[in-house]
Length: 223
Figure 1 (tube, rainbow, N blue to C red):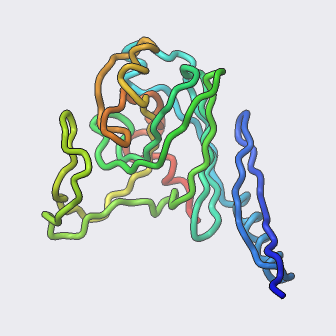
Figure 2: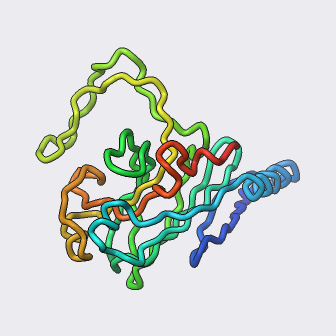
């Protein structure tokens, strides 16, 4: 008869929300000890920081109360990032990226996922990945390797091949309005940007620009 699996759930509080870090361990003392050590490591190797209004939002004098609190906890071979956003329009979808530069031009960027606000303009999300001093994007030379074209319509159709680049670290975070219409309704410009799944996002709402271009907060975490 197979042993039942034991599920260990660790709750990390951040700002006004609680998000679950999940891990599955088979039953047995050795597994339990390993789980406890992983939890202890997460609390000993973590960083906490804020996101602030983007340069575009400040210039447009919109979303004056927008903010976010971020916690990144290292689990050894992976990190868990919890993001709490607030002061934003209610019941809207926002798009979250790890980026090279906090302000435009943003350089290389990696789409993490979406965060939806509730009726109070608050939202909470958990992302799992590599979010530390080793976070980078690389395109092994030579360039010109074929890439799938999924979105082929203007204003930002997919590239059909990649340029070459050696490793480039991406230590900043950015949050974009899910649509130009949502940005405009919040009093921001209705500029169309690339930063969502169909490449028709609104302007950047929040970023980590307060850290400076080359000192993004993910650089502070050494697992």
